[in-house]
Length: 142
Image (cartoon, rainbow, N blue to C red):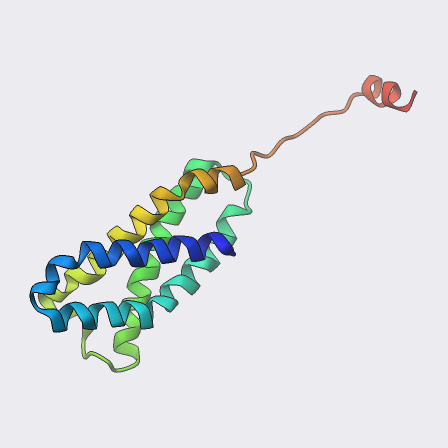
């Protein structure tokens, strides 16, 4: 459970840096960071569920990473949709240039996941099947 939270906190930092050009209009930048901190928990929760479901499966490491990258996209879009669900914004998907903010969040999540890929690989276990022959079984009993 610790790894998804680390990925999430790295993504928040990356997002703050990626959207730094929006500081030209400070209100937009501050509101954007506020929304990420407040509604990003939805993305973290969904990504954690996806992470736990994928990492413990006996599928190849590359497939796991592909699913996790797709999970970043789905999680960010889910969190973005929560702005409309809680009536913070109306018709959130028609907000024009403000759609760059969730795109930045997806990019930040992807960067964070890329930085953590080695630790995820270390947790990955390739399924190993050992066939014990009767000879091996007899020699281990001796």
